[in-house]
Length: 564
Image 1 (cartoon, one colour):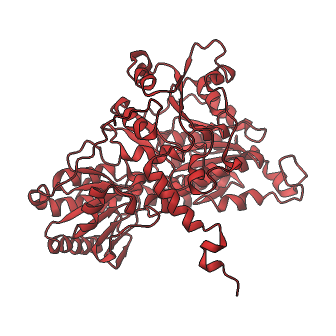
Image 2 (cartoon, one colour):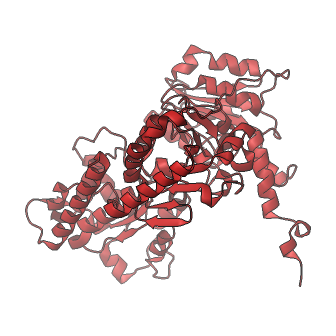
């Protein structure tokens, strides 16, 4: 039995144990509801919380501050956000919706009025004034996978466990409301002895065996002329390790979508770059679309992830592996998830490695171009900054030019790219000009000692919108800030824990990137990069052109807009 199958079965055992605990009378030692939740989060490896204090969550924050157990030193399985009833949770809706869209596991924990107040419905602050205390719960249902509204202590532990399991197995945000009077309520610790299920239910063995045989037959008919296309869900649903083992042993050529970038190390000898439909580099487009068979792993076919739906890969030449189903040409097999399936495919398809290794893969390179102009262009900036990146760097790109500029440059071994291509909320990364929406978070970073290097691409407005529509319209302009003074205003008055720079020429940028003190990254650093407002990566220009045509703002360009 494979390691993945064993883990899945163990997870199922844990799930059944929790169901048994729910049916039993809870006895033994006790713990407060607030500390029960904190203990569960510790067990999952959560070490950080993001949120804002409010009068309905202060009691829980006291529990958090006084909690003395050692935190698990590990990468968190989920993130969690603490909010206050109404005003706080509604302010967080955009971020929670983005987490749902991008499949990021987040616990949205909301402190709410006491159970007695929810029953009597007084006209409290932070309410709508009409007695609808459930209005925010209804809103949360639209943007979270599951919800728990704690009403009494008897079901608190089971409800907390339920939403946390959903969060980590479905890779989606969940919602948990915690009334003020339940924070200190005592409940049994019995359930805490059973770990939460981290894996989805195991694949049904007979169906899985049939699917493996069917896929192997497709590979045989393709005579090994296969390419692998990796996408977002391979990352979101924890299949990177299995995927990379498959690629190393089978040697099939592999390409990535924009949302799948860094699922595979980009210095891997069989990695060929980014496939983006009609926007792809010609050599990549030819290799992917001419293959007899394409194995898609974790596909997510959104507009900006597919070159505006311009894939030219017929269904009859496609196999799709997903977190909870597998598709072989026109057939779908529900419940056959990729995390368990991939190791079995590795074992079955490894004999193809000799033939697969002979398939030519274009080298994914992005040399720094030689340009006569001294001003910094996107064509120069991204390859030059790519040389600055180091192995294991975490690179966060903002919605717009950065999301597209990063695609055409190889990133170092074990680096991680974080972007928001599907949801696309400007300002989400607190970077480039869109940071005017969220720049206050830099103050928090200074206070807690986070030391990022932030490149602000100063193009005096919303460039992606300019290319979609309204290149010269004032609604795409923004006020210019004095970026090099910003960190002083936001908390580093003596400029001892941060440093800011402005670069206007290629030489200034290169000198800074070559500076050892700058590369040491021992303080927060902001680099303002002056660029032309109508300069943009080529892939963004092509995508924006396609999006503009699809939006069809002018009735004359939209045949469907004619009057009857």
